[in-house]
Length: 281
Image (cartoon, rainbow, N blue to C red; front, side, top):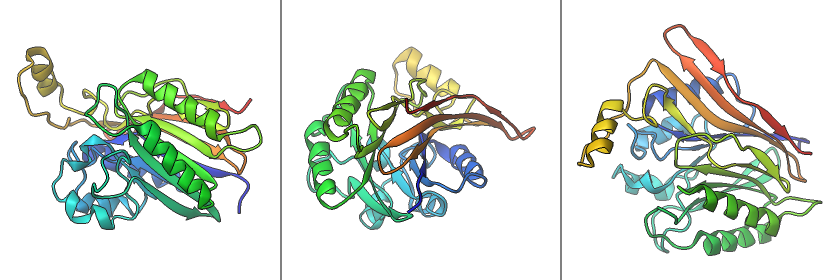
């Protein structure tokens, strides 16, 4: 067991540009346990089996959200997809699983995915379902838990994260090592460590930089300005943004969280980093 473990968590991967950008980034940053939200990975909506298999070559665990069901072939493989988790607070009997446990460098890591309820479709309470799952994983000897909370409301994310950090983490040891918000595709600048738990309200997204959260501007404008139905189209752009966080942790808790906020332009192969880091203490 090594002293420190690095976790890379990527916000919603959106379309081919997002997939390729993350793949390129990981080519030179591969000494980490990699988690990515992929509910928009296949042309902006859902995840095909082909893309799941391709992404599996360089990502350890996939989280998702309410759009995971948008590609109908998900029902053909989600029950056998060991590295893919869907929101745990869907009703009992829903295809797939809401958490997964991994053995990484001798460390037992669990990943839980959950949906928020504020401004979101009706769903079972994450407060009840997630805490029950954490209690179960703790009994099974899991040492570190990371949570992707796919939610719209900032207040819900902050409140839920603080509740979990105060309930399961102590000054001596943190069970919840990371809590990452997703869904809005807009990265927040509030990365911090709360009682041994790395936190960010929203990790952002990976996809077309010249876009409206990954989607084409013209179709987004028509839909939002007229309120009439309009099919969103994935944006085409030479520049991709890569959003996420890099977390260092040990057995006692998270020791550092650093935002990943890059713009990569394929035309001139330039990479512009924006971001900062927060250390424990």
